[in-house]
Length: 208
Ligand code: TMP
Image 1 (cartoon, rainbow, N blue to C red):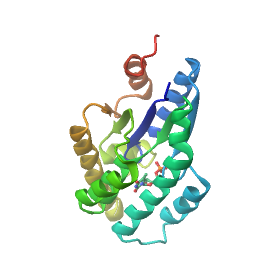
Image 2: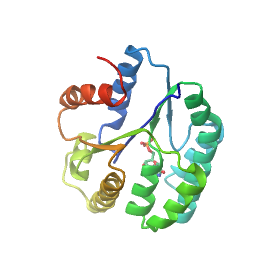
Image 3: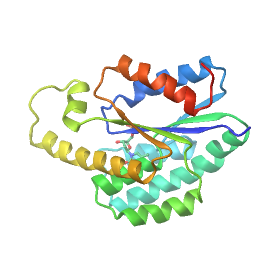
Image 4: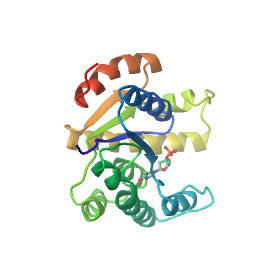
């Protein structure tokens, strides 16, 4: 049986990493063979690209950013994700193509249809089976990550960027209602997990 491909998304500060660890534990407790990976990254080449892409001193054109994200993704799919799924291993991926729509289009203004073209080229119809998108207002996300003070000008600008990122995630969810689940990440972490557990087990076809 082919494994399931699960992706996690959300703006920075939405609590995605905490939920990823929890979700991995839940699936492993049900005996599911699991591979945890991330984007950008997931292969040796992809991790090198990640370092360059996340370098704060690097200012890239959004086209370049999107092309590099998809170059890393092509390697990741060919060498890691697809072989794992075909071997029956489930893949839990911290961000995937929805992040390119959210950040490079929503955040940085790249045309939506350019990313659709790259998505089609690189994925040829392959999509995650389930995407959990942790949704939170940017100012709340910022407060969550420990910076509760009034935003300075730069942080305000960041909030505007992240609000566009958030809106783009919501647009993707409207366009892919079957696989994308929006989760209110403003609730306490434990509450979210309590609500999420039966939903995940049911959509993954696991008996609790
Ligand atoms: P992370 O901090 O959740 O590991 O994500 C790394 C950063 O990369 C995050 O700020 C979002 C960004 N990103 C994009 O801009 N486009 C993409 O396609 C992906 C996968 C991540």
